[in-house]
Amino acid sequence: MKFNYKAADASGKTVEGFLEAENSGQVLEFLATKGLKPVTVTAERGFERKARSFFGQTINVADKVFLTKYLALMLRVGTDLFRAINVLIANFDKKVVKSLLLEIRSNLEKGQPFYQTFASYPKYFSPVFVNLVKSGEASGNLEKVFESLSVGLEKENDLRNRIRSALVYPAILFALSLAILFFLVTFALPRIANVFQGGGFQPPLFSRVVFSVGSFFGNNTGLILGIIAFLVIFGWFFIKKTLSGQRFVSFILNKIPIVREVIYKIAVQRFAATLSSLMSAGLPILDALNITADAVVHPVLRAALKRIASEGVSRGLTLGEAFSRETAFPPVVINLVAISEKAGHLDEVLQTLADFYDSEISASVKGLVAFIEPLLLIFIGSIIALIALSILVPVYQLVTQF
Image (cartoon, rainbow, N blue to C red):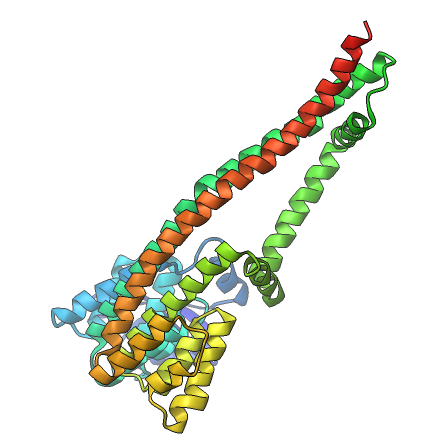
């Protein structure tokens, strides 16, 4: 059970933190051994922990970049880890990050490994992050590990932002187009339909169908908006919170050739960057391959990496030989792995490969946007043209009768 405490030291300075304990008595004993006078000791309820995450209190990439970069800097200038954590606690106002840092300090005081606290937050820190910290802690090279993590996180965040920025315009265009269509169908069409119905003129079948759809939407606007809102909320939860939803989206996206190409390149880039970082940190190749496989969300590449580890390297094959038996990776990747392994600088070549695919992804995303934009315009234009025809044809027939 977690207890939040506030205490005062001998100089009267207030100290805050939390501790895993069976009861408040153990917390008081802990404070006494540290020479601290307790002010408040309260049990943290599960709802409070969930509320912090739910209302925007999450550890995002920017927080992790700042954390890793600052720790690398503090360790580089010779500051010990415990003092560096204390400085971060004093500088972070975000509750969930401060809570993490307080837990790290508490665990360090109890002699627990540094990486263990990160491992207890799998929602925020991936197995790659945890294992890199674990390796750096074991080798006494945390400074280099945190520098590598900060650079990797910045590159990952930059790539994500570039993809989002490229997709902003098509998304806005699609949303505005839907809004215009909704206005035409729910407000304009019903009024035009009433004009024709009131004049005793019967429009063509095509126009009557379009007018009927418009009248239905106009008479049931609230119901339609409610259904749309429900579908959006349900879809968001289905995709974000369920494994089946994520698999469904992945299946659909992988059926679109140009999207499938972008997803594949992102997976190869993630593979190269992750394996490079893990090998640079000194992890055994089998562990590095299995961790990388878990980090790569592409099912084909993940299965290939698992086979390379279990059926190749673990049975005495070199990494190059194990990769050459797989067809999931591009030939250039397979050849570079084999050549650089013999030369003894595989981690450097993999990082160069990751940077290459980073630029390839940007180019592919631009191509995807260039493909989507005209499709959106054609789709929206076609619907507007159908609505226009449904209005113009009966108007023309009405005029020709006189």
